[in-house]
Figure 1: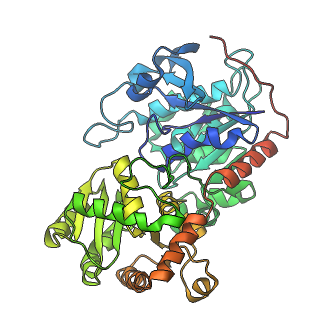
Figure 2: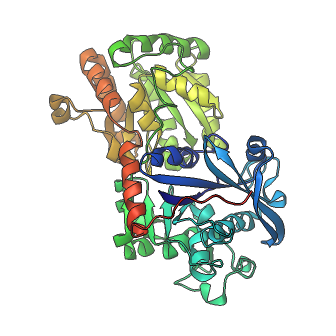
Figure 3: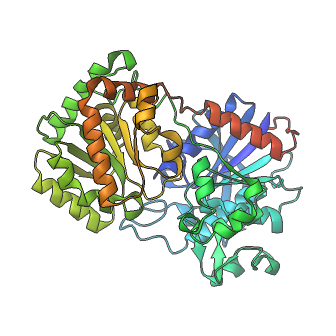
Length: 491
């Protein structure tokens, strides 16, 4: 059994702001059938403490980044969970990254340096007689962990490490003034170390010092070696391309299953696609949409330019003029929120906008809408299109990153062979999106063709079965096949 410490800032169902939380929460179960035991390390946010209650103490810090802290042991979905209990850093009102107004906590560098330091300590023997074979760090919040293992490990030889990039746009860049407080030796501040454009780069540190790097789709692994997508890190990533792997994210079929989903007004499968109309009617009724003969589109997204929401906002008149309707669930840039709300007011009965996020509503939209719009300028993997494929909600998406890896475009050849699963378009422009909407309308009007696209998507296997095996094989490669016998931390 390979013992892996997975360290991240969030994990579903305890705390989630996006796909990172879904993936970190799913990994323990996904890998368990491959002889891998994953222990997840999370910060001690209020929601995490509410879940663990009175948990066992496994380690205590008198001074961790200037504060007292403890490591507590519990479980998440039946799998081992470790919690960094540092009340000064994590027991706060507001979000996990910022206050209630959305302003980031000014000491995020200290908060997540503490998390990374604790992870490195655990992966290098700080708890006697308890070893991990590998440390798996997720995104910039855990990026310093491989650097700590390299420059300042704990009392025993450090475990190898794996750094996963879920979204390279979030890099954890902080001023040089933070470096003296990180507990790293002076030589760590250099071009080969944690220095990044005159400051400290948490993600850069992880990419430079991890034994290997993964990202969440093969397409994204290629893209981030280019300036347009690497966002300043493409040079470093290119030098490490022999250690770079693209492994698609999976989805949990127990959570996303149209046959058992209690959020739906009607459950269904490939043999009973007609039942989706009940969910569609429920959406129409809930949001005051007029019935129509054209497709009902859904958007479940952050409202930001990188998600292509600016272009979509400009094409809503086109969507309605073609006979489509839209329900949007999301929140983000105030200017975009206002633009979508204005369109909903202008097209009453055709467009509905819900600002915020609601997990249950996301399920209903996937189960009742005809198509899910994903016009992202970049998308490392994307889970929304995978949920759409599983639920027969046809993805209409830009050809980038994981979207291009997981959707088979309904071109003439794919349609003739019966393998198409969605509509892809190149470049996120007014023209490309308008053309994609027109293609969608034409395909939707061909009832048997549209049903075939739906069923092909639903038959796709985007569970963690294959991706779990790829992670397990990589873990085994990184540790040289030498797994640690199971051990139990002291209570």
